[in-house]
View 1 (cartoon, rainbow, N blue to C red):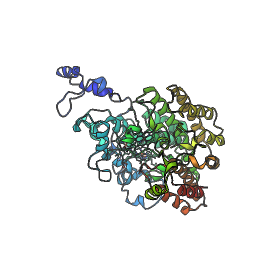
View 2: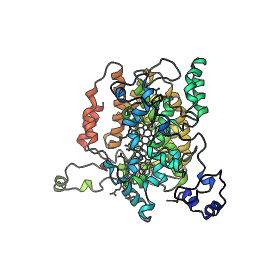
View 3: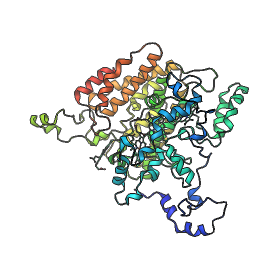
View 4: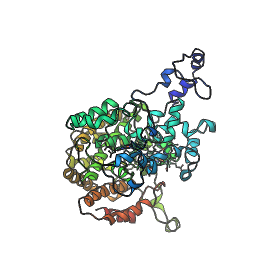
Amino acid sequence: MTRPGWIVAVLAPAAVVAAAAWPLTARSPHVDGTPAPAPEAAAPPAGPGVVGQGGCASAGCHGAPAGSAFGHEPDENRWASSALVWLAADPHRRAYEVLTENHEPTKGLATRMMSLLYPDRKPEDRLATKEVRCLACHTNPTLATATDAHSVALRAEGVSCEACHGNAGGWLYAHTGFGEQRRKAGFSPDVTADLYRTTGMAPLYDLGQRALACAGCHVGAPEGNGLPLRDMNHDMIAAGHPKLNFDFATYQFMLPRHWFERDRTKPGSKADPDFDARAWLVGRVAHAETACRLTADRARRADPWPEFAESSCVACHHRLNIHFETDKNKKERGPTYPTPDPAVRKLGSLPWQPIWPVTRAESFAALAPGPAAGTVEKLLKEMQVPRPPLAARATAATAADELAALRGRLTGLSGRAAFAAAGEVLKTTAAITDGAWDRDLAEQVYYGRTALERARIKGGGGDPARFVRVAEKLRLDRGTIQFFLPPDDAKAIRDQLK
Ligand code: HEC
Ligand code: HEC
Ligand code: HEC
Ligand code: HEC
């Protein structure tokens, strides 16, 4: 592990000397009296400044009482209570708090993780609330490296409005007039895009861009565009961090929705019934794209490489002696977990990225994927060996660019076409034989099937009860390091998901 550059910058003696002649116009010293670091180290990221949720949450803006909003599905007036819906019920609100010692449900987890990651540091020097590696995802990423008191205080808001929407410094006053500007321009999509771009807001109305915004924290992302590195790697998992089994469609569905889903470039529109199916499809590709960018960056940094979190957990975490167990052993230990079937997976190989399995090369067949399918196939060949070459970096970077093009195309699919394509992609998983059915794959297929089911229900068909049994099975061992599905469970789950 290398030492982050900012530590060196903060400790540089030159900063102490400079403080004596600190001009009044420069950044003020820290509240505790220590001089602020040299301006180039503390320079705020390019782009608009952070406002904080208080700037959005006044009653006349997005802070209308949320109470009545919870009673019904979001309607076109939901914007008025967006902030209070988030404050009242969004899991992102506690994202910073879980880094503290006292957050009840995860009590001590962050502290324990930090002591395992940094055994040589003094306890006061290994607070997760001061660790850029953690802050990068557990607050607005643009605040993670900030040193001024205001920014440091704003971190306590957790993953607040601007962590997803972009910093609102340029948006806050300007956007109240946007409705009129858009109307005058006949609601042209270009005008909407321009308004977002010129104010530095993330174009979350584009489903693909939205999925990328979530994946930046729920998968990870290289440093860039004023944001720090976001990398939750195997070191952190081994220290106790939950692994990131993200699925865009399902996670979006799980959030208390503080918005009315519609096409923001067309007045009076609302989401089509197949929205969830499209979200799943676009989300899979955005997820794979983000994963490839992270792989390329991990190979570039080689810190460490190979990075174990790139590979299927089951490849290493399985019992070695299963075939030699006696009946007595089995009885004592309860249900047994099979080692991977050698006919399915070559011994010594490490399957790549089981957490996004439905973008395996064969799954692309249904999508006319362009060059992406071939490149991903090449990447799999390079990655699925005990020591992937650093050259996988170039392949992963190319795959990411090609997946970006595919994502753009899928975002524009009509609802029905997206539903059909999602069904086809999921069908290919039926071809994956039982031996490869670990818990991660089952969970991802479950997410896909339920997204399709939600679309069916909105279209007037479907059966809400259909997946309850699978959910129960999958929840059995959530959060534990029990990666195999007991054979009986695997079969039951496959039957249900057909
Ligand atoms: C790449 C982004 C990322 C990084 C880096 C990261 N986390 Fe997380 N963390 C997450 C996400 C996302 C979740 C929620 C996972 C889920 O439920 O799917 C999470 C969950 C957690 C939880 C459990 C919270 C709960 O409510 O159960 C703790 C504790 C935690 N992180 C601490 C840390 C600490 C400490 C660090 C730094 C050593 C860190 N995280 C680094 C993204 C990250
Ligand atoms: C986890 C990410 C996330 C966070 C945090 C978040 N939002 Fe959003 N927000 C979204 C997404 C996604 C949309 C839908 C975007 C679209 O349709 O253009 C949205 C839409 C909105 C809308 C449009 C509502 C409508 O129906 O017209 C408003 C207003 C809004 N958010 C305000 C806020 C405020 C205020 C906060 C903080 C208190 C916040 N958001 C926090 C993701 C987020
Ligand atoms: C700046 C980083 C960041 C961004 C961007 C982000 N999240 Fe999160 N998300 C987190 C962290 C950290 C947690 C864990 C919070 C906790 O458990 O306390 C989390 C938790 C969640 C949870 C709860 C998970 C659980 O296991 O209960 C959902 C659902 C979720 N996020 C969905 C989304 C969606 C959808 C988007 C995009 C619209 C998004 N997130 C964008 C960092 C982020
Ligand atoms: C290439 C082999 C390999 C892969 C792949 C791998 N691990 Fe590990 N894992 C190890 C080794 C070796 C250790 C023990 C050394 C350590 O703690 O870093 C370990 C330790 C752990 C621990 C700590 C166990 C303990 O008792 O302290 C957890 C938890 C863990 N891994 C989870 C995962 C998850 C989740 C994945 C998939 C995302 C994964 N591992 C993928 C090799 C692997």
